Image: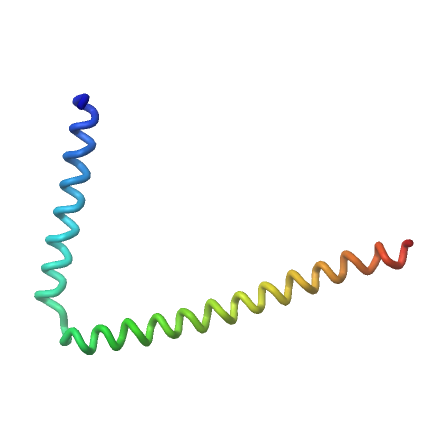
Length: 78
Protein backbone atom coordinates (compact mmCIF):
# COMPACT_ATOMS: atom_id res chain seq x y z
CA UNK A 1 0.00 0.00 0.00
CA UNK A 2 1.32 3.45 -0.86
CA UNK A 3 1.98 6.06 1.80
CA UNK A 4 -1.01 8.03 0.49
CA UNK A 5 -3.24 4.97 0.95
CA UNK A 6 -1.95 4.48 4.48
CA UNK A 7 -2.67 8.10 5.32
CA UNK A 8 -6.23 7.79 4.00
CA UNK A 9 -6.71 4.62 6.07
CA UNK A 10 -5.45 6.42 9.18
CA UNK A 11 -7.87 9.29 8.63
CA UNK A 12 -10.75 6.88 8.07
CA UNK A 13 -9.88 5.02 11.29
CA UNK A 14 -9.65 8.33 13.17
CA UNK A 15 -13.07 9.43 11.90
CA UNK A 16 -14.67 6.06 12.73
CA UNK A 17 -13.09 6.03 16.18
CA UNK A 18 -14.19 9.59 16.87
CA UNK A 19 -17.74 8.75 15.82
CA UNK A 20 -17.82 5.76 18.17
CA UNK A 21 -16.48 7.81 21.08
CA UNK A 22 -18.97 10.59 20.36
CA UNK A 23 -21.87 8.15 20.25
CA UNK A 24 -20.78 6.63 23.56
CA UNK A 25 -20.51 10.03 25.23
CA UNK A 26 -23.90 10.98 23.83
CA UNK A 27 -25.47 7.87 25.35
CA UNK A 28 -23.85 8.54 28.72
CA UNK A 29 -25.16 12.08 28.86
CA UNK A 30 -28.58 11.45 27.31
CA UNK A 31 -31.27 13.44 29.13
CA UNK A 32 -33.83 10.62 29.06
CA UNK A 33 -34.04 6.83 29.03
CA UNK A 34 -33.67 4.85 25.81
CA UNK A 35 -37.36 3.93 25.60
CA UNK A 36 -38.36 7.60 25.54
CA UNK A 37 -35.67 8.39 22.99
CA UNK A 38 -36.85 5.56 20.71
CA UNK A 39 -40.45 6.75 21.09
CA UNK A 40 -39.46 10.29 20.11
CA UNK A 41 -37.47 9.02 17.14
CA UNK A 42 -40.48 6.98 16.01
CA UNK A 43 -42.75 10.04 16.31
CA UNK A 44 -40.28 12.16 14.38
CA UNK A 45 -39.96 9.51 11.67
CA UNK A 46 -43.77 9.26 11.35
CA UNK A 47 -44.07 13.07 11.04
CA UNK A 48 -41.30 13.12 8.45
CA UNK A 49 -43.03 10.35 6.51
CA UNK A 50 -46.32 12.26 6.50
CA UNK A 51 -44.60 15.47 5.38
CA UNK A 52 -42.76 13.61 2.63
CA UNK A 53 -46.02 12.04 1.44
CA UNK A 54 -47.76 15.43 1.38
CA UNK A 55 -44.86 17.03 -0.46
CA UNK A 56 -44.78 14.16 -2.95
CA UNK A 57 -48.48 14.52 -3.64
CA UNK A 58 -48.14 18.29 -4.08
CA UNK A 59 -45.26 17.83 -6.51
CA UNK A 60 -47.16 15.16 -8.44
CA UNK A 61 -50.18 17.42 -8.65
CA UNK A 62 -48.06 20.34 -9.85
CA UNK A 63 -46.29 18.25 -12.47
CA UNK A 64 -49.59 16.79 -13.71
CA UNK A 65 -51.08 20.27 -13.91
CA UNK A 66 -48.08 21.58 -15.84
CA UNK A 67 -48.21 18.63 -18.23
CA UNK A 68 -51.92 19.19 -18.80
CA UNK A 69 -51.29 22.86 -19.58
CA UNK A 70 -48.57 22.05 -22.09
CA UNK A 71 -50.64 19.35 -23.80
CA UNK A 72 -53.70 21.56 -24.22
CA UNK A 73 -52.16 24.02 -26.75
CA UNK A 74 -50.82 21.13 -28.84
CA UNK A 75 -54.25 19.51 -29.02
CA UNK A 76 -55.94 22.81 -29.87
CA UNK A 77 -53.33 23.62 -32.54
CA UNK A 78 -53.89 20.32 -34.35
